[in-house]
Structures are given as structure tokens and as C-alpha cells.
Length: 310
Length: 313
Image 1: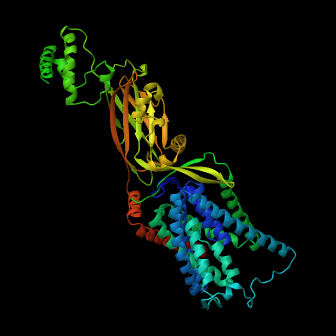
Image 2 (image 1 turned 90 degrees about the vertical axis):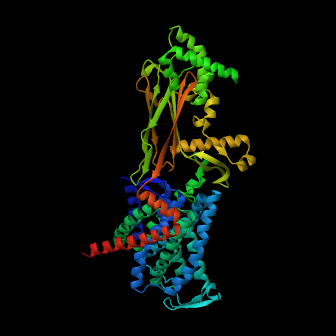
Image 3 (image 1 turned 90 degrees about the horizontal axis):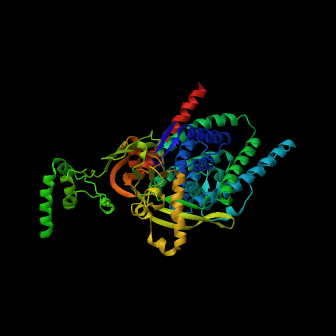
């Protein structure tokens, strides 16, 4: 069964993309991550032009994050003030990122940049997660209790920065610069590689800002929904690269997949889950990296001014 | 001037004597000339009929003497199976059949191979950038590029036998027939900074990549004669063909000489929902972006709400 994608200008096998959406949704439900970092490479591997993959993934991130964000909001797990500061940074980052996409596309370096960004971030995050998960499993085997990551009295360089703000919900009194920078960085990345950036923001909030873990997920989801929505609109206006039909297929299958994933995740141990996720992240990293170093079958490639102004 | 008028007048007189059948042939403008130079003149009309009249002076005496009449010139009439192709959400590519017939065919049978037919189906010209990768510090990076101001978005050629056997290079090049002669116009800025040999590589790369994509295709022996005058060729239009008008060109050859040509436009347009979405995305991109976000929010909430109810029940 095929359906013609109006913006990608190609027919898509509906079953393939439904399967892809539910598989990514399943994994994101299983591991509690957005899944954008898996979805975008999969879309590119299946022949969707890179700009369309990135633009459409942003719409999918809105859909997959919005229900979670509302649920967290209802449980009062969102630090709105922190979320707004992150969002302010995110907007700036996203605007710059979308412009970067346009410039890189004209220069013919967009695919390379996306690939390099993926290899770098997936490589770093995957390795860190792998080390952490292996350590956790070893500790669990030796019956050792892990020491708490956060001790309240601890101070680091972040606390010496100016423009301090009080974040009541997170019980923090810190400079606004680090959350702004984190938000901007994640927004920039999200616009360029079509990932929500939760996999970067959550560790950054825990380890750099030292936010309490109960508000981390809700606050990052709150920020991701708005930044992804903005990114979608900007990709539509700047790059004409958002395919609503493809987005709808991915959204519906993704949300359903996520529910099964979450149910399956409840039956697995946290350390094992993180180990699996680390392996998956590294696998995607290696797959993308391979294309950069392997000698291409044809050194020449051609491109048209895809989706230009009417 | 005066001489030619006299010639015309005498010609007309002789024609009148030659009889009704010849007159009809003349009026139809389908007179055939053996001379190759004359045969290449494809334009029909007033200009031609005057020359035809002049030629008649040579031909008419034969007619008056009651010998075999020179056979009328062959022309080709053709059409495409569908002049408007709609791209709807169910579009998965299609097949365009170009069919036609040779009027006044002298071919004894379909298998005789008396005539050669070339059919070219071409998309709109669009700018294309060709890039070449080089290994930079272990990574394959696009380093060189070459801009083409226009290259056809789609190009298909079908013929009764390999085109090199049908016509000479000059003709093929002049009419952009064949994958070697696809009209690619390089941008001046690229020509200046690129070596000619390099430019040729880029040109070949465009054709090669498009061929691999299924957008440029060639099929020798794909034009088939069904009877002594009827022929058909079926050309695949892949689903990812860029949307835009196509032009079908038909050339009729006899021993390397063009006898007749024919052209027909094929409209390839979005229709229904596809058109609406595309139009929305291109004309009102900001609204379209907001619409997509709204669709995403609603779909996300609905799908999870539906699921929660299902698991709760």
C-alpha cells in the first residue's frame, strides 16, 4: 500500500513507515526517550530527502512529547520558570539552527554536517551510557548500593556565574546563563539533526544544573514541545520541508508503539534498559559513521534546488 | 520574381492537366520527394506548397505520360495515452503509451523494419548541482561542484533499434536525442572555474545518477510496429518523477533521413488533496507549519487518549 507524499514528492510504503514509526515509538516508550535521534536516520536510510526527514521529525517530536508533557504538568512535575528560561534559549538556538540548515543545503554540506553531528553526539552519549550501565550492572552484582549522584551542599563553577535566578520548583538559586545555553544548544541541535534533544538535555539538567530528578523529565518535555513546534513552523517557512502526510503516519504509529514500549519497559530492569539503549545508540552511530568513511560507490552526486519557493 | 511567377503559372497549368488525384495529393501537402535535402524540410504550409508547385514541373510530365505516380510523402501522426496525468495520493508511477501511425506507409509488414521511429519523452528543464566527493582526512566530503542552469527533470527515449544506427551524431545532438545528448546547460561561473575534461565528468555524472534514479531511461527496440503503419512505445514514468509538464517528441526516419516529426504535451499535475497540501505549504508556509503542529498535537493527544481508555477498560 503506497501513498504519495506531497512535499517529499515520492510515494511511500505506508506499512513500512507505520512499522518504522511504531518501532521507534516502542523504543522511545521503552527507554523513555523522544526517539527523534533514531527516527531521523531511519527516514534518511529509507530514501526521504534529509531536509524533509529533519523537518518532519520535528512535527513527530511535538506529537510524541505533548501527551507526556501534559501528564507531567498535571502531576506538577514541570518547573515552569526553568522551562521558560530553557525555552528562551531554545528559541534562539532553533532560529540559528534552521538558518544553518538553509546555508548548509546551499553549500552542499548539509548531509555531511548531519552525519557528523549524529556520529559525535550519539558516539559520546552512547559511550557514556554504556560505561554507566555496565558500572551499574557490576554494582548490582556485587550488591553495592550506588552513592547518590546529587549532594545538596556541592558547588561548582556554574554557581559562580552572574544573573542568578531563583527556581522555586527545582529548589535552585543559579545563574540563568547555563539553562539558557543548554536550551540554545539543544534547540540548535534539534533544528539541525531533527531530534528533540531530550537525550542531551536530561543529563545536562541532572549533572550540570543539578535539578531534582522528579522535575527533570517534565521540564524537558515542556521545553521540547514548544521548541519542536517552533522548529516545525520554521522548517516549513524557511526550507519548505515539512511533510504533513508523512508526519501523520509517523505520529499515529509512534504514539501507539510508545504505549507498548512503556508497558514492556516496566518489566525490564533499569540497568539492562540503559545498556540496551546504549548499544542501540552506538549502533546507529556506527551505521552513520560507516557512510562517512567507506568509499562511496559513486563519487558524484546531484541535487536540485529541492522544494524551492513556488 | 517574375520568372518564378511564370513558373508557378505554368506549373499550375500542368498540374491541372495531370488530373484530380495529383491535385488532391498536392492540396494535402503530402507529396514525397526522394531528395534527402527536401525530405529534411519538415515544415509544412504555404512556403512549401509553392516549392511543391515548382517541383511539379519535373514530376508532372511523368504523370501526363501515364507512368507510375511518385508515392506521397510519409508523415507521422501520434498521440499519448493520456495527455493529463493526475498526481493523487494514490500515485505510484504510471506508464505512458506513445502511439502513432505512418501515413502513406510503404512498409510491407510490421517486421520489415522499413522505418525507424524514435520517441523522446522529456520533463521540464530545472537547475541541477553536481557534486564530487573527495577524501578529506579519512572522510568523504563534497569538495567540488558544478552548476547546471538547466537539465531535464526527466528524460526517456525509446526507439525501434539503437539510435546510433538510426541517425548520425550531428542530428541526434541538434535535436537532443539520446542520453549522450541530453540538453544540459552549464552555468557560466562553473564553466570558468572548471577544466573541460572535469566538466565532461560532471555532465556524465548527472546523466548517470539520473539513470540510476530511474529518471533518465533508454530503451532500444521499445518502439514496436504493430502493422505496416501503426507503432507504439510504452514508457515508464516512475512515481518520483518531478511534477511538471512533459513533452513527447516522435521522429520518423527512413535510412537515416527524417521524414516527419510530431510533438505532444503531457500535463503532469497534482490533484485533489495532494494539490491542496502542496499549494498550502508553498503559498502559506507559516500557516502550513502551524497547521502541521496542530495536527501533531491533536493526533498525539487523541492517540494516547484512545490508548489510555483502551488499557483502562
